[in-house]
Image 1 (cartoon, rainbow, N blue to C red):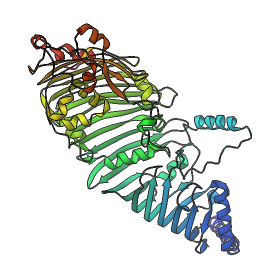
Image 2: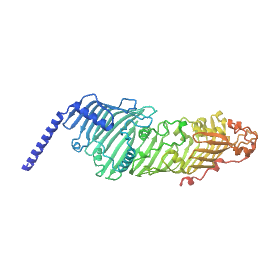
Image 3: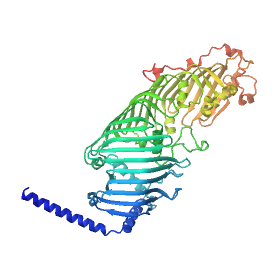
Image 4: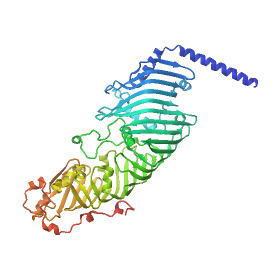
Length: 607
């Protein structure tokens, strides 16, 4: 070793030694009680909540700067039903020293055990995890709002740097969540391990939710380094994860790329032999609430104005990015439902635009193809389009997929949809809809449960046509066609709904205004059983009211045109069909054929 190298090593060792002694001296003079007070006051200033440390607190310097605490708790929101939002039995913090010199916080490791977290929302939809300070009343609310909007806009590409953690280990954790007016959801997390290595991060997470056992494991690129470089350098993040739900595995593979001052791009692949989506759907609903109640979750029908709700849809949860998510799942199921098979397609993000391209899947013996898009989903007026077709399945298979307790037999079915609209709520989307939907159903049998579960609209229509249907358990369906053309939220029914049963020919005409959801529909039934009394009631029944509160009434025009002597009390009491006369029996009516429109007119390429 030459002389210059020796001198350098001696100087370096001396500087390191002096620094270590200095840090030790400073640390040895820190009173644990004073350290506890400092931590508590810092948390109080940042969150407005009280941090309490009931157990001992210790500070160590070697091999790294570390803090250990016992019996740590964070107080809850004033309106919450529990005193503490978070309690932790044991906390270990391993802190990086150099970032402290730049007034930044970065952790080599955080170790937690015995965690109890209680999350909930109040009647206003506020979450107890929201530490945002209230807006002052000094007239600056508008400025604060504008500032927040500007901040949100400017941070869409590169967000504010978060606190960085190289490794996180958590054991024996329990999470509870309760939205206002709902039951509490409990999730146990036996183990969560996120360990940063030189070029990768290893992930192992285990959870128990209801009857589900969940596990995620695998690797990603180094998350700590990626966060460091996110805004300043190019980041390439390989993804190789597997998500297991009750033993069924979903593989997640691909890569996320990020360049400074630009949106992230990704190319990810989801593949599985068999996977169940139930618990993930519940988690998405929880995340989608964002601390707010899910639309319609606790709303009373009497308080609602429209069937299609006015709650704002969570389009803002869609991420702004550029990339593709390829899906290839052999069997995808929900609990208690018939599984979807051969699910394939691509989900594409293009900035603020979201596309579902060539999604195909099987259901029973049938198959479906879907294309959809949401344009400018971060804007004030997102535009949506949906095109699709489904064929080769039966009404029986479809109802088994929705509700296996409903007894429906056969009923070959086909569907086509081509709709376009814009808006931020279901009511806006319905009131601005353009396009058409058509459903065709062949011969089958339907029990009364199917009708009873069809909602107020179906029950009102069926009872108005044939109140005696309650005396039989089944209805034999010959055919049914529903063609619903829409123009700016207006549905014109020009004999475009036709139903034929073993006893009835039924044609519906009139209009439905989706802006106000008002109904003006004439029901034209013809009895086929031969039980006639010389009175023709065709055209006397009218469906009015709204989609939310439909009512059966009397078509006055039909009464005048029929010129029959019949007490209207019989009509409103429900005895409407048994008095069909022999003349109607001789009338050759084909309601289904008259209502059916060419399938390619709705969905190009459909048969």
